[in-house]
Length: 75
Image (tube, rainbow, N blue to C red):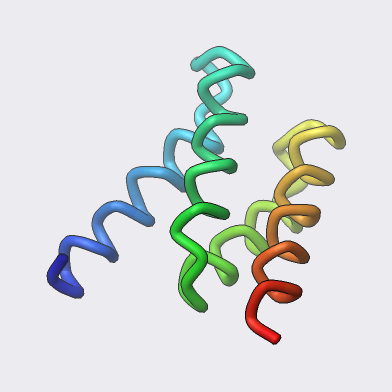
C-alpha cells in the first residue's frame, strides 16, 4: 500500500471514530482498525483520539488502550 493510501486510510478511520452521528459500534470498530494497522502514524492518531474531549470517556479510554497495545507490541 502506498504511503498516500495509508494516510488516507488513517484519516478516514479518524473521521469515522469522531463522527458522533455514526453508531458507537462503528466508531469503536474504527478505533480497533487503527490499532490493527499498528504503525507509528496510527499510534499518533489513537493518541489524538484519546485527547479528543468531544468523544465520550469510554471511547477515549479505548483509544488510549489500543495506543498502549501498539507501544507494547513494538518492543
